[in-house]
Image (cartoon, rainbow, N blue to C red):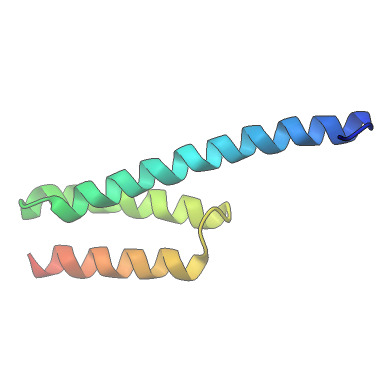
Length: 83
C-alpha cells in the first residue's frame, strides 16, 4: 500500500477518473445502439450530430482511440445515408 500522501491522492483521483470515463463510454455506446436501431430516417439524421459529437469528445479525452472514433462515425453516417 502507498505511504506517500501524494500517492494516496493519486489513487483516489484515478478511481474517480476511471468511473467518469466508464460512465461516459457506456452512455455513448447506448446512444450508438439507439441510433443503429432507429427506423425513421429523419429521427436518425437528427440524432447523428449529437452522437458524432459524443464520439469526438471521447476521442479527444483519449477514452477511445481516434481511429476507432473515425470508424464508428463512418459506419453510422453510412447507415443513416443508406436509409
